[in-house]
Image 1 (cartoon, one colour):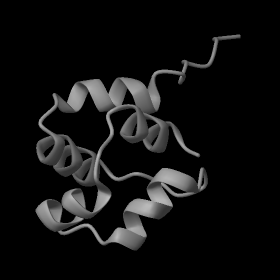
Image 2: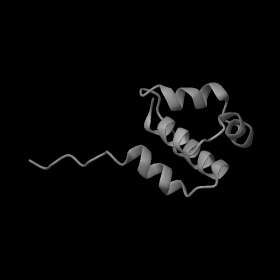
Image 3: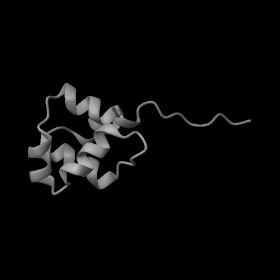
Image 4: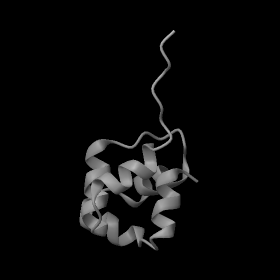
Length: 73
């Protein structure tokens, strides 16, 4: 499961409802939640945040919080 999938699970989000509100297909939401190789687009993140009534920055932090800058050598 992806970081987005874990976040949606913790929030008890109904993916069918998110799909209906955002226009993102259930298949795409399932890929975003379960396949770590699937890339989340910024517009998808924003629409999901609107659909579940959270600040987009909160989801962004959850999904990308482990990213770090490469150290300069």
